[in-house]
Length: 212
Image (cartoon, rainbow, N blue to C red; front, side):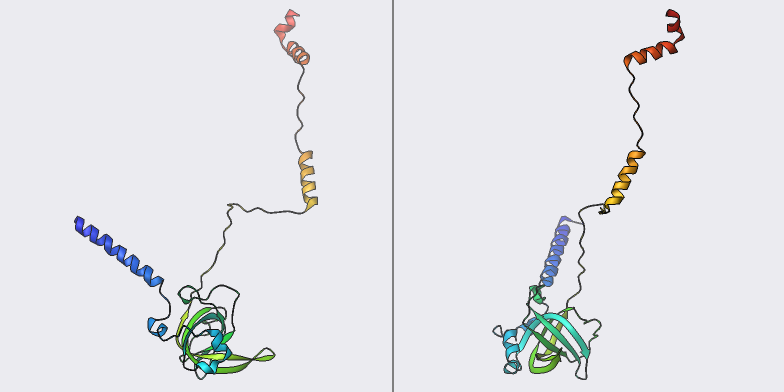
């Protein structure tokens, strides 16, 4: 391969990486739909008076509370959350209410299950009043044009220590254990004095015995 070919392959790889990075940063809702959304319309406006915004396009993010298949299609009940990067719901304990998202085609409610994050773009289609516990709740109804189900990312937490440490609060176990260690501890031999050492050495040596 010539030097020119090597440089061409290098720059080609760089361009592919840049393109993939830009694609990974793009919003999940198409540009065609986003151009139809009025930035002045907020979810708070819609939930306060849904019928005043009939036919208006809006993009919402939230957490699925419940999903069921009906004669109209799949009806999702969603808890609204503030929209973050690329349209993903922010992981915060903030919400302005709930809304209903009606998808004309049937979705698998086992996949679009409770707790899943979704980003929805659709038209406001008035409201529906449904029971909520012991009261009634007014839900804005969104006729879904695009929906994105965010993948589940497993969060793992690692300990900085290589070994596990266990804590024992059994005082009597420690007391008994330490006491037994003291019982089986080998006794130290007493150091012999110089006179005893000399006396024993002389008594044990036959040559020294002859000199005495």
